[in-house]
Image (cartoon, rainbow, N blue to C red; front, side, top):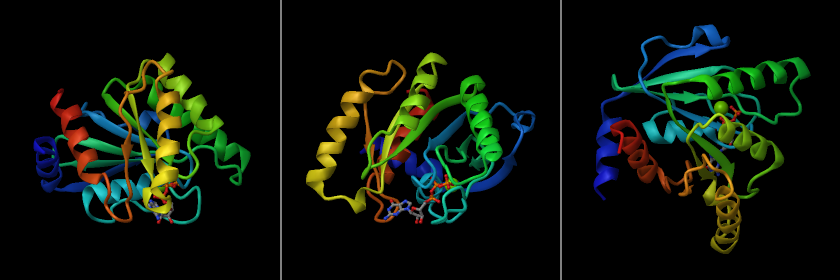
Length: 206
Ligand code: GTP
Ligand code: MG
């Protein structure tokens, strides 16, 4: 499919780590478009970025709370992928959770160059209360976002169709939520080419 090929070309140009941001004043100033990956801790944000890029550029780990800052990866010279810390991680100290939550919210709500947020949902679990809260926040800030189901390799097809239908029904009730859901696995590569194609469309303004 043509968009997949365009997406592949976009990523073939190479990706490098640009910066880690712990306070909102440190966001990049060069006004390149940004694509962010948000979701509960351990949902697979960093792994998905690695799968897109084709190398282990973002630190992924089995320990929830791995990513602790907003990590900006520059793709070619054209745009940034932004790996966000996970939300809903109850085991971290309360103050740390509050700081991350504020940083994530401030970034998502107020970033003009944020062209799309991908909201990652674990294909085994579906949408949780914390996800619903983020979705409401994105709706009210009019940030265009799209749901990506992760870890599809861990669920049976029959289970996946059920979760998909449920998530789609919920997505349709959110005004800023893009009405197409992507199904991915960073483990076996499912949906990665489609996601690259989607990113191409966002960057090209299509
Ligand atoms: P935080 O940075 O803590 O918010 O986590 P994250 O959302 O970045 O998750 P990360 O990519 O670090 O992955 C968490 C765990 O899930 C790791 O052990 C990954 O190997 C595993 N994982 C991620 N994606 C997949 C997938 O598609 N399939 C399978 N089977 N495991 C995955
Ligand atoms: Mg991470």
